[in-house]
Length: 447
Ligand code: 2IT
Figure 1 (cartoon, rainbow, N blue to C red):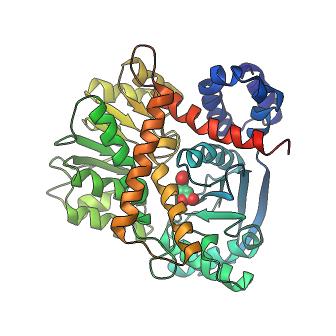
Figure 2 (figure 1 turned 180 degrees about the horizontal axis):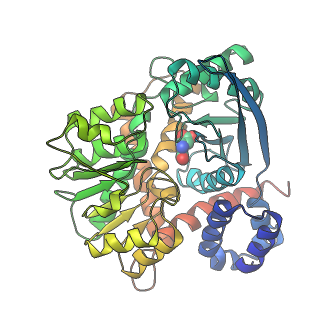
């Protein structure tokens, strides 16, 4: 396999799908050497099969807004690869959603899900629907209209979506209600991220952020360093940043920045419990403005319009909002300000130029597919509980999540250790994730 040849082919077939092409290229660069040591992979055309989704559903979603106007959106589900299990991955509601974005996210999901060591295939979906400024009734009608089309293609043994940007517990609830009515069965494993009490798992809302901080804690320990007193910069103020903030504080670190599309909030003395709780209200309001944190806590947080979290001095930088949110200049500013660790919690949060700059400066960098895998892992645990009609306690789920993150960390080290003793976490995650999928594909024949 030659990465250049595969990429030239893909670019010709899928012109303009830049995010998808970027995600594929990163994985292929990591696995090229190992792949070429296995002639059986080449013979079975594993890479050529893996880069194309099994299938993509595209559908019109029509709904009525509060003014009585008819609205149209486009919905998608990308069922990417089912070698390891039924398709699994989130739904993103965001105005920029398109096929390229969901293919990139679905592709990443295959390797991330593989890293969890659970029986999960890879998929992703969503719609170009913008939740900003929408009422609760509008959100419900949109979720129901989305499910009119999606319900036939999902189920616990077929495809199990969850939340992602713009989709949280409330949206999953509305979608599950519609699914149950249309499918005429209470198959709770058809969606994850449900509320506790009707199939949801304790710790699922916190899991992506908790898992990320368990991983970061290992990165820090690897350098004989400690989380105590470390300044952490997060981006966004959504579900992921919320969970990460809780765990960072619990581990003794100080969260000094959160952000939104409007700018950054610097929190000099570290985020407090009241502020973390307020992040939930900010998300529920659908205003999408981080300035509201500074308005509510004027003595603790300072808002600067148009700036990103990467302008704030920190030890640990964790993109936790959207892809490509850290560019090369942001990375250079962080390095100049003395950043010691960078861990993506958002999928592909850093642009290739940013990753290159961080790695060149010999600063440990870990990719989203490893760092944020605790979210989907806990979704996998939710499906287990649904199938067995059991409820684990918060402590039980958290202990399993912690073990999964430790195992992922160990795999990244095993596959990412370089000759000079340093760890390339990007290569480690890509190679470890790939090997499990490739072996399953080989075993299952040419299909
Ligand atoms: O990016 C992700 O891993 C998610 N949005 C969660 C996927 C899931 O199925 O829980």
